[in-house]
Image (cartoon, rainbow, N blue to C red; front, side):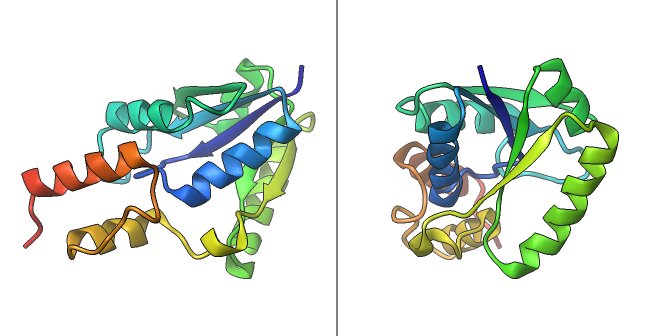
Amino acid sequence: MRTAIYPGSFDPLHNGHLDVIERGARLCDKIIIAVARNTSKDGLFSFEERVELIKEATWHVPGVEVDCFEGLLVDFANAQRADAIIRGLRAVSDFEYEFQMALMNRQLSDRLETIFLMPSQELIFLSSRMVKEIAQFGGQIEPFVPPPVAGALNRKLQQNPQP
């Protein structure tokens, strides 16, 4: 069984992420969406909320599990007996950083491969930061995020309006 890890903060999950998950599911038997518990970032959604939203948005994708990790990604991947790490690429500027990370991960664990996947052309511009900004200013986010995320994002911003 081929297992891949798709790591990220996913704050929030958007349709570009979902597209990469669906593409990865066609290549691997199991994809573990690994939500990073990054204490240096203040997320809009709590860690638990992100995990739940990802589960709701990916229920239809066979072989997907959602888990969390702290520390080194390679340690988590090795503990899960993963064969690969999936990384999404949007632009050339992403590639340089992701390439460096892939090489470092290979140094730390030479049995893990990195698979770079690009989302569909119509989703390549999306980022979680952009989605949150559009939502904060009252823009329509429904074309950019799965329905459970749109509802949660709208509720979250109504509870905590931005100045």
